[in-house]
Length: 236
Image (cartoon, rainbow, N blue to C red; front, top):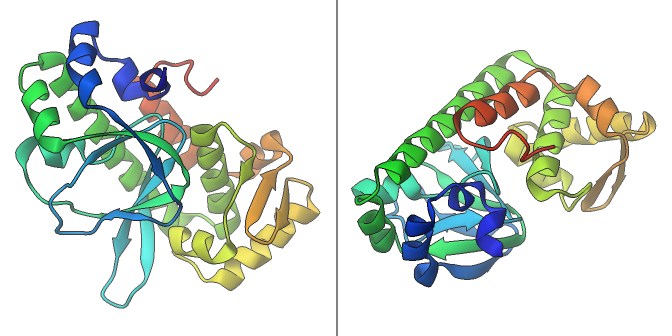
């Protein structure tokens, strides 16, 4: 069943899941769709099953940088929905795929009756905050090649696929670097046999090689999710 493919939903008690089940709607999310912008009221909560969503910070000059990546190990919009406040980042679909959506009002009503669900939401927000912190440190201290390797590995974990439909322009936007920088690094990784890059698509050929080349942030974020939120076997 779809709900078991999302860690948040799979961690609910049967009573909680039974309350949600009639309100969960299967949704297909298309790549580059903007789910909401900064300052928007949350229109819907999304529980990805194989889609991947980026939480992005956009500057006044137009530059964008990804703060966190959310997939089957999380949800988008749950904390803002609880208190009825606005979104603090743009949410954009990074990789097309399936998700389950829920009306924020329904989510809030059910959550307020469940101490367990409130605890899950709090721990989930901790993981997102930790991921955003790590991204900040990563951008300031690590080379583009190590960051790209980390980013590809995280996307692979969330999709369960070695084939990732990314353009270099989109990768540059997510990493906060120029497209030319991504092009240079992609050529290096391809020459090393770690990836195979064709226009608009990256195929991971050597997972262990990418892990060796990735910065420490990949394992750090993974460990934070294991400690705070998910079943340790989710990524195995």
